[in-house]
Amino acid sequence: MEDQNPIGAIFRIINEGGMTMYAIVTCSVVLLGLVIERFYFFWKMGLDYEWMLMQMAYFIENKQIPEAIHFCRQISGSLARVFETGLLRAGKPRQEIEEAMNSTISEEILGFDKNLSYVGTLAVIAPFIGLLGTVLGIMRAFADIALKGATGPAVVAKGVAEALTATAAGLYVAIPASVFFNYFKNRVKTTQQQMRFSGSRLAEMLVLADADEPLPEDLRPSVVMEKTAAKGRHEK
Image (cartoon, rainbow, N blue to C red; front, side, top):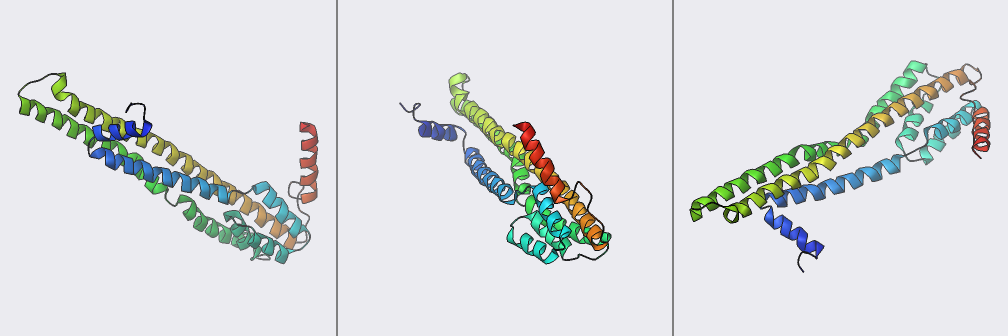
């Protein structure tokens, strides 16, 4: 009956793994909290870069820089803050605009990297905690042999079970921690590249507008909207 109870089975496995299992369980709970927090953060910061550029193109093409700044302040997200930095420097040389936005991007990326070092640390230390449990389990097996003066499966079973359980538990934490760490790192890298590209496009639009030159077709909102509508009709 005890084996049919999932909670009872979990506690039985923890007890079989010895004291190190409590450290591994703590690591797994911390990892779960960090992963949920990071997923929520990326979801909250998610924004359509093409849509945002199209909105900026509309404001800039119509000489509505103050309206564009107000629009960015109404939207939460890193890209909106990066664009606001660039818009506040409208009329400046392109290099100055891009440098200011790159500084904001670097500041925003710090928020994206937050807590990732802890995920990486858990991926590294979990196997070592499991290895510690393995060593303690083997030591316990030898201690049982010395205490009872005999060898055999029944004598060493408890120590070996502790060793194997701790090893497996450490890997169960380390493997997903490594996967999530690499996944979030790749998302941070992609986000940074997208923000730098979008910032460069915004700087280009501001310089062209300041020189009273028309925006190129790939940036003009009317053309972009026509292409999007045509693409939607084609997909139907």
